Image (cartoon, rainbow, N blue to C red; front, side, top):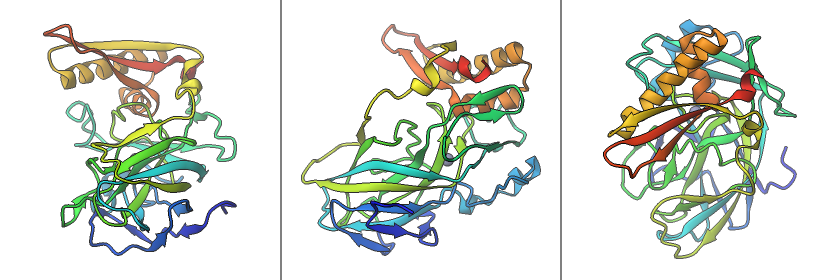
Length: 314
Ligand SMILES: [Zn+2]
């Protein structure tokens, strides 16, 4: 399955919270490359036959399973775990949902909604959105992290100093991620694979898609990182940039309110330009539009922009 992988971690070895007491399923030496069979963030709840009613039966105790943990030999608190994203084996099926109570505009989008995606796993060419558009793809793991030092089980949903549900779409093939190690052996796990997501993941879900992922592990001794950092091997938005963007803004003294306004204004604009429902526009914003802080110094008002790639509807 992975020609250069030293180990495979099967998807049966997964867990639902970060906890330093979970026994490692494999010990690997620095320099190893490991293939992880990941679940999607819904633990396989959605299938190509799913309907919107299935959003209501999603079991929240089973969201965001992560495969692992693996113990990296010699990793000590204060080290950085260096993870090179080696490659993906995507499944070709994905889903995006508006889950009531979750998402940046949860107060405005109170009904469940669901988009199903079928894509070419070999080419990762853009996937069709109904007959109206197509969304460029780029695979990455939404959740990638190591065990926190603090004892007990910690929810997978919030990201942490040690990584976790980072949802950084630029952690794609070739990226190198550095995570602060807090426990002996690091205890690394990964999951929540995505076929596409914009910066912000505004509706709360990306193109959630089951994939396997291969990762190479190295150690940087005594790095004393405060927070995760990463390097990308090249440009990160070539797949979105070529036709330009529609951009909306939200302006005011509160970045969260500004972000909400910028996204809400884009939902309205996409409805006007392309005749799509507000729910679909909101989910499309989540899978391929980017929130940006354009300005955070001209007090008292900050500018948040939302960039939607025009290539989707060209
Ligand atoms: Zn996800």
